[in-house]
Image 1 (cartoon, rainbow, N blue to C red):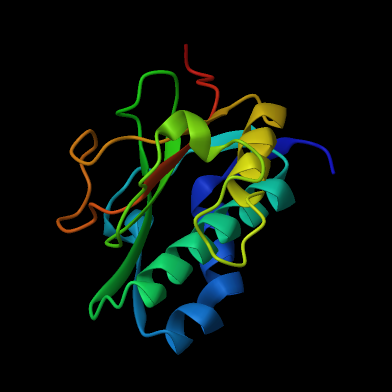
Image 2: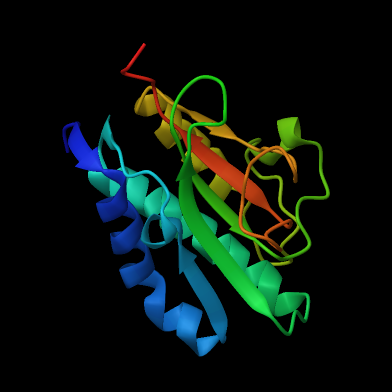
Amino acid sequence: SGNKKEQVSVLIRQSFFNTGFRIRAHNIKAFNGIESGDEDFSVTCARRMIVASLMNLIDNSIYWLVNRGNKDKRIYIGTTRELRGGPSIIVADNGPGFSDPTEYLVQPFITRRPAGMGLGLHIVDEVMKANEGNLVFPEAGALTLPKGFDGAIVALQFKDTNS
């Protein structure tokens, strides 16, 4: 489908709706940053591709939160303009985070999941490139996030149309 202007609040809400059953089934607390005051902005993108990318990131968080035995499992999706290069949707959790250097995370067929194919982050990276954006892996402490979201942190960074 073609690119058009979309509100990030709608993209986030749709992603949580699509994954809501799994989130609840695994007793994960989901936090929508827009509902807590994060900036809502519009981006030009292919809506279904971005929603599918957010769902993939949520799925990754669910897997690592559940399989690492966290008792207090939390996922946050919000927004930021703190990253140089453009506004971003942030997906963060309180899981184990990444153990590989970030340059390897988007390489195809690289995975730490026993039955994984290693294509999820690669595809999300390609989706962001197709939408004139970037997939970024900020370090814990590099962004202003709610307390405790210091596991995996991923940003879908969009082209800054205000510059």
